[in-house]
Amino acid sequence: TIIDDTGHLDEKKNDNDSDESMDESIPKSMVAKLKKAAAFDAAEKSPEEQALSQSFSDLVELQHDLTEDVRFTRASVKSFGVADGTDIDPNLWTSIRLWQSYAEQRLVARQNEMQKEFQEKLVEFLKKEMGDGDEEQELPSAIGFQDLSPELQEELAELQKRMTSELKPLLLEQTLSMQKILEANDHDDRVELMRYFVDAERKRLQAKKTLKSMFGGGALADEDSESIVEKKEAAKKDEPKEQIFFDDGEDAFQ
Image 1 (tube, rainbow, N blue to C red):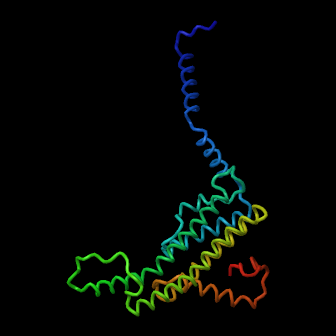
Image 2: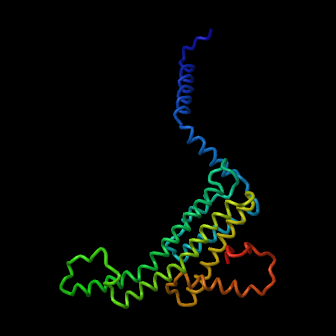
């Protein structure tokens, strides 16, 4: 029998009880997240995964250089997952979901941008119809097509055509991108696909940056930069290619 008259053994016992209660108070979900985060920090990247991470980092820098309305934060570069499976967090699947959200936000932003100019002209038209003396009167929340001036009717019809021709390919690209990722055979194929999509967006923004520098830093529409990319790709068609990526018909992203 050990008799402790110093109180040290009781203190140690109390410390152990405190540690055990702390362990029990930590939710299991938090422990799982911490383990996944630790695995993310310790994971080694393959050359393909490293290339994807670098491509994403270059894209984010371009987005901030151009002050894009829809862009990733610089902090997202460090947390951009490329690992296989779900034992590591973040992983490639979390990045795929992030990319899908980005594509959706870019589509909405482009739609709003195209509508903005027409909305400004519509407000001017409504103010004229109401007269200069009715500045305090609220503008109507809705107006019929027939109530528009012939010029605005023509502009609205043209805007609808433009939106169909420009936004439909973006929506189709977004859908096909996810479809191809889901149909990929393995992790390596998904990494290669993601890098292709990131590189395509990076090339579009690089063309936009080039145009911006050529025209003195003025604002450029997305279709201008996209047309430059298309022209560059068309010019390369006659050149020998080492590899043709996604050259499988109507759903090719070029």
